[in-house]
Amino acid sequence: MSPFNTISLVGMPGAGKSTAGILLAKLTGLRFVDTDLDIQVREEATLQEILEQHDYRYLRQVEEDVLLNLRLDHALVSTGGSVVYSAPSMARLKSLGPVIYLKTELATLEERVAAAPLRGIASDGEQSFAQVYAERTPLYERYADYILVTGDNTPQQVATAALQLLPRN
Image 1 (cartoon, rainbow, N blue to C red):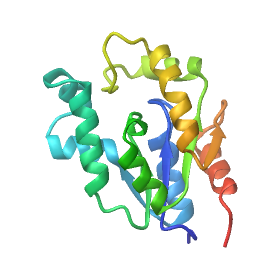
Image 2: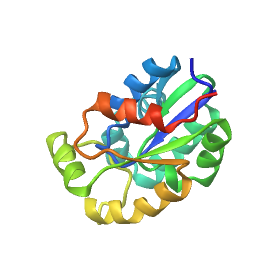
Image 3: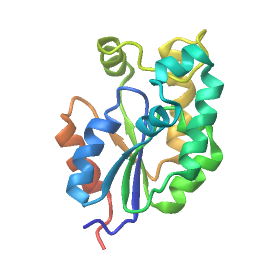
C-alpha cells in the first residue's frame, strides 16, 4: 500500500499520464482517477467536442471545477495537461500528496499526439504544440515535487521509476 493518500501525475498530452498512471495505481494500491474522463462524463462530450462547442477557457474552467470537487482520497490522479493553469487545482493536488511531472521530449509527444489527433488540447488554437509545450513546461516544473524524465521508457518502466522516486514510509 502507498504511504500517500494521493499521488498526482502532471504533464503534456501524450506524456503517458493515463497509461503509466493505471500501472502506478496498481503498484501503489491506489484507485485510478483520470480527470479527463470525469470532465467528459460531466459534460457528456469528449474533450475535443467541448473545445468545438465552447473554447479552451471553458474547458480549463470545467477542469478546475472537476478537480476542486472530485473525491481524490486514496487515488492515483492522472490530470489533464492544462491543470497547471489553475493555481487552486494545483494547491489542492499538492495538499493531498506528491505531484510527479512526467517530462517527455517534445518530439516524442508530437509523435504520440499525431498518432491520436483530436485529443482536445486546452490551448489557444493559434498556438502550435511546441508553443504550448514551451508555455507549460515551467509550470509543470514549478508545481512538481518530482520530475521524472520518461525518455523512451515503456509505461511499465515509467510507473516503476515513479514508484522508486517516492519515499517509502
